[in-house]
Length: 524
Image 1: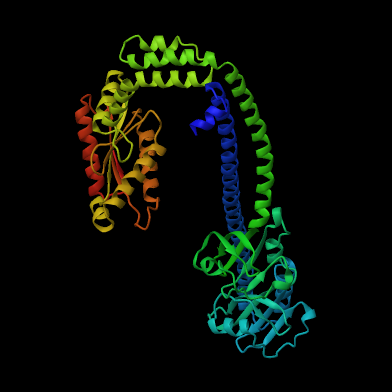
Image 2 (image 1 turned 180 degrees about the vertical axis):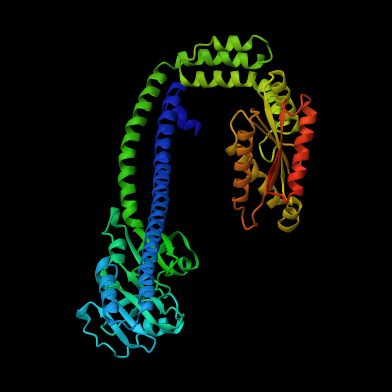
């Protein structure tokens, strides 16, 4: 290697130039690889999140639609129960239910003997008073309650979902049912709400039932098809909602979000082919690489000028190197700042020396912070509270003392472990930070004991803040634990006493009153 360098007659300046070229080239290549990974990963995560939110939104809307349908059927069932034998009433109600909202493709009334009493539309050409025993009707009559069927084939060869309500008379005798059917392969309100054209980068949505059968798909030919060879179906059936990378039954990799429609147990899936998404990533990466190439070329041009001026580079570096051994001198920072940082390396070196000279001062500041702060919750500890309390008293600033204690905290540690107990402490600390103002002092003074110094002496404001914190803690779910509650006692300085110790004692006394009153309450 040494002989090669001698043969090339390389001096220090040439070595700097070659090193610069190799460094910039290597940095460019590494940047492109990193950019490729970050962009693709970000696009994938964004696609999964968007699909999950979209599926959840559609599932919620569909669930609401089913709820409205059941209400309409229930209204009709109640009305018919008062006079089920009035054929004109039955006919009018069936006609109204079919035509009023256009939510159902067909409406049937069946008595408790499986006889067809009435139907709409007329195009069904069904025979009244005949026995009507489809899968949905038989099961609905058997259950005698609100019923939503799984998809099944009707006698007219429609793939349908039947929604029904039982009809009872005023004496609660079962008379039959009224049902509305949704034809999955025809136009209806549900598939209008669910349907979507192929959207951005060929994303689309479909719906499957509990038996892995497709009940909605942009490709209507696939409705009724049972899904197989899809590695994500089992996972989706086990979860209520989420996101997943899957390979569909056609062998295509997809990024999917899914959500369950609670009332029927269907799964709404919104997905996008991974390959289509990555095509977009490649276009973005190509454009970014061109821009980066121009940028790095410009950097190389600057380095080339630096190489030409290399003799001037070493002067400030030598000066700083001499000062590196004198960092303990009192005026060294002033001397360092006098060095003219006319290029990046000198600026960096000078900054490093300035940081080194300040390290001791910064370390003292850091130690001061840790001494006054509780390491688990990030709140002030008892020492920090005393410092701020002294400042409030010196400023004669009225304040309220909120003494807070976690109810049955020992049971949390005993039943769920100390790691979960620590989690409860952190959650309460976070809620305290969120529920109080920046100038209110939040502290942890013991195991499960907390103090808040509110800079107000107004009872209504302090009580409202305390209740807000109590309710927030009660309604916050922490892993699999039952609700954890807190008790709060309040006292005011100097309203209750000019002696701050007496104020703290009164706050503790009110806390004990809250404990003795059944906990999960505020006393003042």
